[in-house]
Length: 361
Image 1 (tube, rainbow, N blue to C red):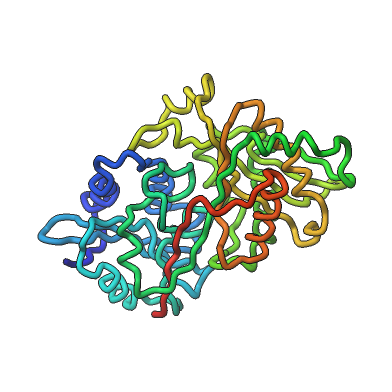
Image 2: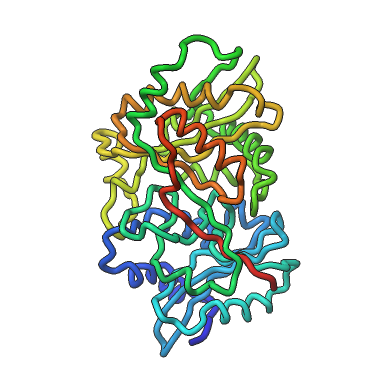
């Protein structure tokens, strides 16, 4: 087996078509992340102004048996990322091949990290459990044998929590109405998307500086990330908390668009229309909550969640699933568990686990 750099259109097509081989007959896999894969691999994008993305194929007996991309981002200079990894089972040491090739790269990286697709917000993680359930939109789904390929590396695990909307609504009904410390909550203005994305970016870049593998991004890059999904997004999917006209934080959520597509399928015009006019979706993803450092002692999160509840209730969503949290982030894990226990009256355990694998170069 060898690792071949993608250098022509034929190889690039094989790179994109290969996941269909891995997931053939798999009823859980959804291909809704491939839009982002094309965006980052094809380029040029704002991301490529500070990062390089080099796709590769694993070749065995002249057949494609795997794929990956080496990503080097000058905003995260310590790491050479291996993203978009897909492979058939029982391959002879794919990590060894990747490591040998990565060490030839002329970068300042001192570590390799597997399972990062350029940025935490672009997709991160290799699934560690619940292989018999479809993923919620925006979170990864991979076969159960993938972690075995990276046992030589250090595992950093992340988790998501899943919860019933009914308990969420009951908690909201018990909360007092009225003003919350002068904090106002508004929905995103889709008519001024660039300006709203700039506000989101400012909060995002100043909220997660202590998170592993986090790197700041320019507003133009975030706009490119939001733009392909503008026909699916509504203003209510982004809530901003403000006080006296100044931003405090945001809450980003969206329906589980994976419920619109079948196994191995991506979103298209038909799915967009179906969502707009019928919306059969029953679950949603509680994607991201961020607060500026000066707002962390305020009740902004409480205000945004209270604002979100009637929106969720109006659509009849029955379940929600949170965005991933690093298990090593004890403060975030404790805060999430405490809130859920207070809201639902029971202790919640993580619903799914994911792995990011790290090693030295």
